[in-house]
Length: 123
Image (cartoon, rainbow, N blue to C red; front, top):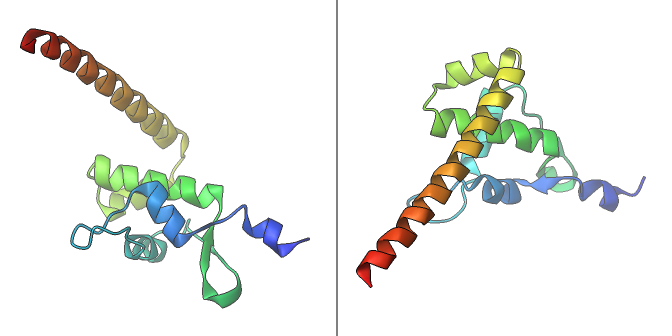
């Protein structure tokens, strides 16, 4: 198997930080520190280590990271709460996550409609 083709299935930690939109508030850059911290906290995260001791994440790892971020940041859960959720049946969290994404899209579309209505009143 060609190692370069195998690596394309994986994302670097920087790419994953960008995908998750993990921004260091002080520096304004993408934060890889958070991902490394979550790796230590959540046994479900097992990045591949290839040459140069660099971390690479597959789609499953990225999916888990998205769930962790959603539960911690959007739902305000604790680390222990997220651990319990990840150790239990994941079907509930998948449903919660997908519902939340749908709700955000609906809210965004409603905000756009309101903005359009308000702009008509300004003219």
